[in-house]
Image 1: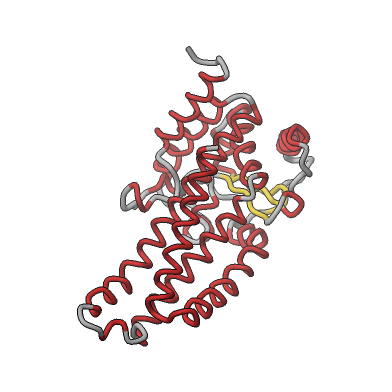
Image 2 (image 1 turned 60 degrees about the vertical axis):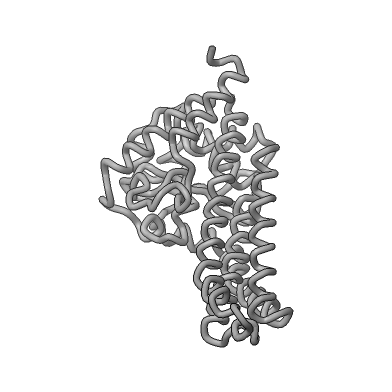
Length: 290
């Protein structure tokens, strides 16, 4: 419940920032124009994100005869959750990672990398798949799209203000400095809040996935292997999806071990040690740890 409230507060913060910036630079008309442009960009992304992500991951449909365990495992988890079976894909990437996409459970897809298959045992793989299915069941693709729409609108409005000024406000006494700060700081603030939303949803998916399998420590073990494996392989064999900032937040773990992160505020994923600590707390509540 707390994690859902946190996501709501973050989205409300993005909305408030958008209203403030829109009012500062263009009043109601500026706000409307920016929101329409942002919606046009992100609605299409939301509607077709599954096809685009699968293509950029260079993934192929998982043949049931070649991956019977994959189909059985996801089928069991989906049945346990009372949800339809998603489409299943395998990416040739040697990076140990996985992602889920799709606007709802009926139009969902799960993709695992070959590098993930190579290093996880059965229970760890089940934990990862339950995490990815939880993203679909929790409507995280929709939530991420809303956050992206708001952040894009804020960026549009700030750029509009950079070229066309703040509707006269920046020419009032002392207003110029505030206008410049708004132009450059508003997009950064929007990006920080958007990253916070994605981190919140990752933690929620960890919790939901652990509850679905009843094995939180299996997912904790998988996350530790994913981070170590990603760093060890650096950028070896990464697909366009893993290299693109637009798709990195889809993955269960930051691609390439999160190399190049600019600090906690700019992370697309929570720190692995924090995620493991959360899963340990869940295991204690389940009576699996002292």
